[in-house]
Length: 412
Image (cartoon, rainbow, N blue to C red; front, side, top):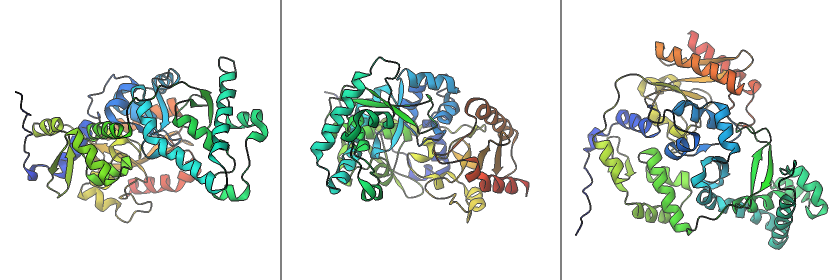
């Protein structure tokens, strides 16, 4: 008869914010543990990279494994990684092993779009019929030079089968019936969208037919799988953080957590983290590295986005430095990109494409390590990306005030 191994009990007072910041850094593969890994492995180990037409996916891969844009783009073209609607219906870049069940998590978002059209008087049958026509068109051009069709091209082929919903539809964010049909097809893995220039930092897409097999799991099993992955990526999270990322109900979250075997671990700050037993065991023997380890990350990097806990990553000096700053630097979502040392945010940065440079500011005098890493990221962005947008509508013009502010703060 076998018995379940006892989970180590870590004294609450030992789990300080300082230690947990470094622990999160370690679990995110930012301490060198993912050096040399391929793009799919990075996303499997560190978590899905949020994609909103910005540079986050590229910076995620470069910071952890030194992956340059050509390698990332090649992995995308080979379908080793892909941008898909997953948790909460939000788009992330996923490794191939997660496509089917990741899409299953995001299916509710596609259904929500259908419900919007139904409230506008569109019958579900009409949307499903349109989806079938879209798939017929894309299957018909498969293997040709024009097998990827953008929404305009699809609409040109289908003509009046795509219905305009007029001004009322525009108010609801649904000017025609086509997006809802595309959403259903994508959520079912019958089509996939591909960036028109093969890059992850823009939001112009075409569509191709796909034949992705389903996960073979029911929704309950997929929820368990999601929380197992999420807890591995984060090294532990509160129930609120789990629910924000997953959009699961309290009951769904607690049932899935029980199925993972996760345990509650109180921290010195009074929070309760849910952790996998193996992670508790690792944390019990974890020692924070002594040497500085500087990274320039995206404001939507998994280190801060998965749990939306950026405020926890500032120490007292950093919190005082950004207090009252316009753009809510201490809000759940960072207003600027962070400069990070072993999980602690020590400064902020933005890229200035007009001058091919990084505008940056650290809360205390910058070390040589900061200067070196700023120069490295500056060169990489200039050579590989040309710009470092936070999201699709971000532009040098919209960023000008922030860049000037960072320059002024650095010169004080």
